Length: 128
Image: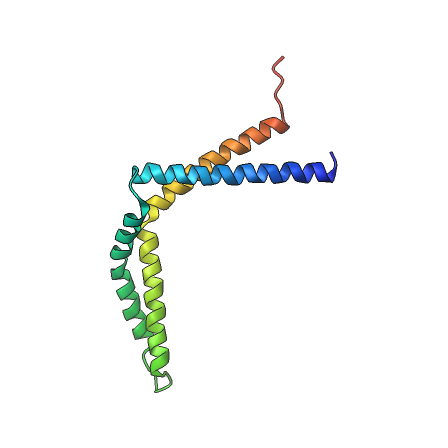
């Protein structure tokens, strides 16, 4: 097999793996949401993530408090905003963890199927 044939074969295989993963992710999302749209789910996750965001702001402000007059108000405010952003991100990730698991599981199962088919194409089994 020449390099051109091999690379074309591998690109096609990569494309099949990618498409099957995307298709599996969509089916995992549909299975989790039971046909409901995803935007209300994320809106609810965002609303529930406000508490961790506020906690992150408080922790950021406390850790950014002036020590011996070396911290400016801008640095304290930046610490609070950074803590809030980290808290919000962590809260959204935590609230949407089951959706993420369903999407990942669907994608991985479809990818495994394509990988198995590819392996059997490369390694045919002769039962005779």
